[in-house]
Image: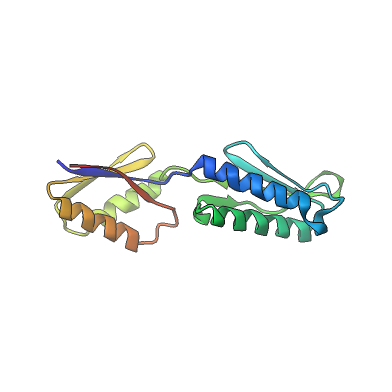
Amino acid sequence: MPSFDIVSELNLQEMDNAINQATKELVTRYDFRGSKSKIEWDKKILKLIADDDFRMKAIIDIVQSKIVKRNIDIRSLEFGKIEPGADGMVKCEVKLKQGVPTEKAKEMVKDIKTTKLSVQAQIQENQVRVSGKKRDDLQQVIAFVRSKNYELPLQFINFRD
C-alpha cells in the first residue's frame, strides 16, 4: 500500500552555514564596529544580542537574509520579543520550529479526510503518515496540502509504493 510522510524538518547544516555567514557579516560591517553585538546558536535556540534596538533590527535583517539565501523557509523561525538585557544591551531569542505540532497535525488529518479521497491519515509523533491504495490519490493529497496554509514549512518524504 503506497504511503508517504508529511514532516516539518530543518536542515541544521544549512542553518549552521547561514548563522556562520551572518556572524562573519556582523564582524565586518562598518556600522557594527566597536559594538558588543553577537549571535549565539545552540542547535535549538538562536540568541541575538545587540547594543540597541536599531542594531538588533539590523541583526535580525542579516540573519533573515542569510537564512533565505540558504533556502531555509523563514516560517521555521519563531522570533521572540526584543527584551532589555544587562549593560543596556538588548536581546532576542529565536526558536527553531521542527516537527508538526499535534494541533496542526489534527487539522491536517481533518482536512485530508474532507477531500473524500480513499486515503488514511494518521499522526505519528511529529509527522503525519498518509497511505492509500492509489498513487494518484496520494499525489492529490500532496497537492491539496501544499495549497493549504498551515504556517509551517512542510516536506513530503518516504514516498513508498
